[in-house]
Image: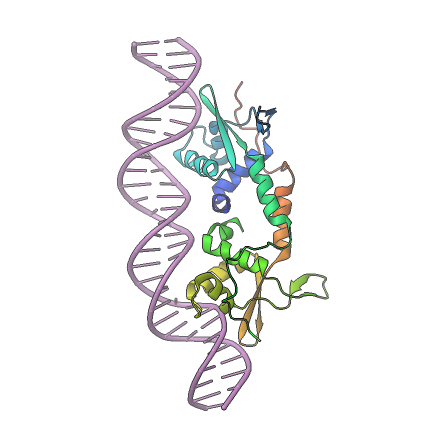
Length: 114
Length: 114
DNA sequence: TTTTCATTTCTACATTTCTAGAAATGTGTG
DNA sequence: CACACATTTCTAGAAATGTAGAAATGAAAA
């Protein structure tokens, strides 16, 4: 996820999607997701200014999707994009606690200074 | 910051520093920071297993420092490392709010579908 | 069914990033 | 001062990543 957000273009896409939120739907399984939102073309327009979709934006959207940060859904000819709120909550959680427990395999072999 | 955490080696260093917290001190300005913590050598030992400092770890520590995620302080011959709690708080904040406001320069030129 | 529109995949190239060894810097000790 | 120790900087090569255009796919409209 951090790697995905590490690219400036992807961060812009992510922030654009975060602030252009559409209506929500609750699935049977209970998870919430957006029903409508910007299409790939609209994302591309907002980010690059061009009115044709570039392969670069498509590539970055795929990376964000692979990282689990966004979800996409076909809607006729278009693909509708939205952020994955669960992923955002997970990252927020990761940074919330002041101290992480048990994140090092074994520190017994680490030599400590006096 | 995301780019810095996007590298697996750097993420490991970051997590190691996060879980190996030392005593804290409060500066005049009010900010809190660690007084002691692992040295570069100890970080290197924990991450690579080797007991000699590698230039690679030094490189990654510099990246984390440039990103503002960690701070380092000279302590005699050693450099003592610790996480920058302020930076962590800032990231936590970034993900906390469900929706970001005003993160797009101008969306008036974005063509919306019917 | 042919065409058109929206988007993705493929390919090649340019750029960035990571890694490792050698040399340089800084700091305490004999 | 010379030496040992801790760490950083420099350098070059290897690996990964980002970009752009062309071709391919998928879905609706004519």
